[in-house]
Length: 428
Image (tube, rainbow, N blue to C red):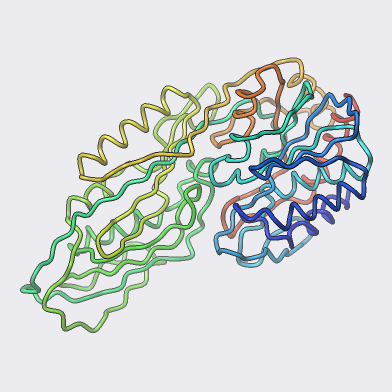
């Protein structure tokens, strides 16, 4: 079982941020050759390893890219008795741990299809564009993040982008003072899995500060990734009085200023962001999960343009489309130019012979195990659409706060899943 952690540490030192493929592909070519697997790589950098003349019934699947809040940073793993963490960065357990399970099974010479997909964290790009042929009847995805659950459904999602140029130049007749207002070190989190945990949104907090201070906005930049709850934001504002500090993490610095004119963003643009309903939009009591949500993830300003990035999710494809249209309609009323991309479908819950088998095996180790759907995007939705006859389930160990610097994975949970995954594999 310790081999899982060993392999995880081994691949963690490889640069695997989304869009960075070269080093991991080189690693996988050597690994596949060492353990006598054929390796296939498509033009989207998806990797498939299988035995020659394979008779595989089961495909194991995970994405190999990770979220890096700081470009180019390799996680430094910290291990204690309970958890693996990282020093001031995301850990990459999402989904390095899943990859480690697969690599471990390859060292044991199993005749399975091992599919490592690319760029999941920036829109499920590898899965959407896969050019590889899968022959297995079943797929086990190991990208879920809660032990005791067999995932059989997930949210679909879409990214929305908006830009406007609503600026004007005003004369400093009111003798405004110039301030830098910033916020940092918020807890952050996954914009789907953590959207119902009342985690503060840094962008919303800074905009609220501007409103409550009767301030005018000159410049604002913040947010880390479109699939993360924003942690850091910095704004330049002007106002007559010292800005209101509405959160303990807000830092206010006055800037010496002799400007006679300011270039400010229109107040209606600030009003839109201030009144924007961020977070959970609806909840499904039957499935005990968030039904629909939206997260304001990033904001930036240049000399002439303000840009917003939002991520919407829903467990229902019709509702997802309605959220997209509603959001875009309102943005356009505030003179934003909009676009969208990265859309992926919801994976509607489906109990079948494979999911039942997975749950039956799981219950041998955890009698409380149950079916579950999650409010996050899994590649399972894409594969169910591309391979409609394939039966798919998803499991995983306890990973907390993915996509944030607080990300950690429970060591005992890694070991528990090791037994379950091996039992599932051997049963097929």
